[in-house]
Structure formats: structure tokens, C-alpha cells
Amino acid sequence: MTTQRLSSFHPPRRTLLGPGPSDMNPRVMAALAQPAIGYLDPAFVTMMEEIKELLRYAYQTTNPLTFPLSGPGSVGMEACFVNLVEPGDKVIVCRNGVFGGRMIENVERCGGTPVILEETWGEPIEPQKLADLLKAHPDTKIVAFVHAETSTGAQSDAQALCDLARQHGALTIVDCVTSLGGTPVAVDDWQADATYSGSQKCLSCTPGLSPVSYSERAVAKVKARTNNPNAGKVQSWFMDLNLVLSYWGETARTYHHTAPGNSLYALHEALLLLKEEGLENAWARHRSNHEALKAGAEAMGLKYVVKEAARLPQLNSVYIPEGIDDLAVRKTLLNDYNIEIGAGLGPLAGKIWRFGLMGYSSQPTNVLLLLSALSAVLGEMGYRHEAGAAEAAAHHAYAAQHAEAAQSKRAAG
Ligand SMILES: *Cc1c(COP(=O)(O)O)cnc(C)c1O
Image 1 (tube, helix red, strand yellow):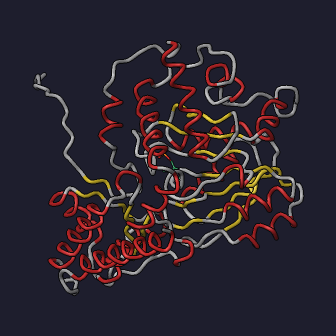
Image 2 (spheres, helix red, strand yellow; image 1 turned 135 degrees about the horizontal axis):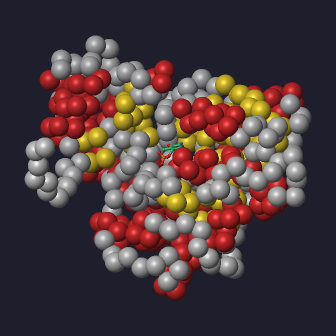
Image 3 (cartoon, rainbow, N blue to C red; image 1 turned 90 degrees about the horizontal axis):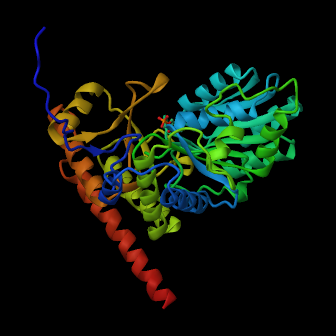
């Protein structure tokens, strides 16, 4: 056996401009490096309560049951389904990308009956289609949809979809993994019942935490299961809300599992950064950088996948120009420029690129870096466009925004 000398791991310095994870603010990285303390230490418990309060702010909700699950966004997704879907429940799942497909898997594994609303990838969910499906299936118990489809960059109208579900007496499960912190998520206004998100997209925290929020209606359904012999216990011990609450709930604080302490310090800091900036300002920043990136991408001749009204500012998907080698471009961006962008998934694999401007990654410096690097790489690969035009278009977009802001300030004062 050969013995190999191992050394500490030092990751290369990348700029993360894909579908997540996003770059972390140095304050979040510093939070991760603080000393470990026990998960029942009074100081830790105080921090947990602050996280819950900060999450209620981020989600715009007063739901007492708003807290982070220990696990990535996929755990948040699964937790919502295993708790709410009882065997035999009819669940309408709206699918317009990868993540809606995973929701269907979840319904099936819970013994529910999925009814699928198919939408073209890249399009938002059409509310009229949901209205029709609810009429055809009046016994629907739950409606599930993805607010911000990261696989395409399309945002659906969560308010309209939640309203329709409620009018038909159905609960809602809403995936806000990519929207939270990037575009408005209003759990109370929507009256969404079970909402989940992830820590590493627009919250720019370390991956592995999934903030969830449950309405009173959702909690009532989960609590009633124990007394219903047909529903039985939630089949996942780890995700059973009734048990998790012994640790994260309002009153008791007893051992359920060892909380990922340092990751929670990081989430606390990431949420604090969001609070300090202000939700409205964070949404405006995402929009501003998206506008500049769009101006530059279009000046380069790139075409957006999603129609303007449904575009996510934090996830820009564009078609790969004819004759350009997808993998070669992404490799060169990574190796020569340390930039990570996202590839297409499913039917869009090899057809699109996904540029993420999420959370801390949504900065003018990154917009200009990406446009410049992409222009250089595409130019070398023979893609005809005017060098410098993309950067100039982005500069103009920012200048126009600044002029507009100055004017509205003058008008106000
Ligand atoms: C990333 C993502 C998930 C899954 O989150 P993980 O942290 O990767 O498990 C779920 N839904 C959407 C819309 C996502 O973008």
C-alpha cells in the first residue's frame, strides 16, 4: 500500500454565477468559523429564536411555525410532502421544470394520487389551467407548485395559484427555494400553507439548511393525522413535524437531532444581512443587476428563454448560440476566469445557459466580469459580435438607473 501525504483542502476562488450555491458574504464565512456550542446551550437557543424571527421577516409571515430544517432544499420539499400528503390524498402538482417533477415523485412516495398540470418549460404556470383542473377534480386536497423554477428562470404567480387552491378548499405547498430574498415572497398575503426554501440561493448562506413556514391550516392537518387511523404516522421519523417541534417549537426544547450549529450561525448572519439591507432593497438590487446583465447579453446577440413578464432577475437563462460548444464555454469560463455558470437541465440540456445573480453574487462587478469573460470566450470560438458592446450596454443600463433614481429623489424632495 502506498502512503500518500495529504494536505489541507483549499478550494479555488470562484465567482459563483450559476443556479446555486451563490457566493457567501465574508460576514457569513466568519460566522461559520466561530466555536461550536451545544444545541441546548442557552446562547444557542436565543440565536434559534432570532433565526425564527428573521425568517418570518424574510417570508413576510407571522406563522409561528417558521424555522430552518437541517438539510438542503430537497429536505424542505420532502418534509412538506411527507407531513401533508396522507395516503390516498389527491394532489395537483404543477410542472414547468425539473423541480415540479420532483414534487410528483414525492406525492407518489407518500401514497398520494398526483394529478399533473403540465406547462411548457420556460413558461409560468397558467392560472386558468389550475382553475380548470380544480373544477375537474373537486376532491383535490393539496396544490403544489414551484414559485421560481430554477431550471428555466420562470416565475409563476403564487398569489393567483394560492387563491385558486383556497377557493377550492385545497392546501398549498409552495417551493420558494430560489425566490426567497431575490423576488417578493409573501406567505401571509398569499395565504400559502407550506412553504420551503434553501439557504444557498438568494440567502447566500452555506448549503444544507431549508427554511420552512407552515400555516395554522397545515399544522392542523399534520396534528390530526395521529388520530386518524387511515392516515397514520408521518412515514419519515426525521421529518415528522410533530417530533421536530420538540426542538424548534414554541415551548419545549428537547433533543431531536444534533442541530448543525455553525451552519445556523451562518444562516443567522445571512438573514441579518438581508434585514439590514431591507427586503425591498434586496429585490431592487436583484432587478438592477438583472437589467444590466440583460442589456449586455442582448447586445451580444443572446436571446432569453423566458418571456419578459415572467423572468426571474436572479436566474437568467439564455439560448446557446448556434454552433457554439456548450461544455467548452463553461469549461473555459471556469478554468480561465474562475466563473461558474449553470448548464441546461432535462429537455433544455445543451440548449441553454443559466446565469445566476443570486444574493451576494448579485453585484455590478460580477455582471461586468461575466459579460466581459463570456464575450472574450465566445469571440475566440468564432461567435461574431462586437467586442466591448456588451459591457457598454451594461454601463448604459446602470447609468440610466442612476439617472432615474436621481430624478425620483429630486421629485420627492
Ligand atoms: C435548488 C432547488 C431545490 C433543491 O434544493 P437543494 O438545496 O439543492 O436540495 C428545490 N427547488 C428549487 C426550485 C431549487 O432551485
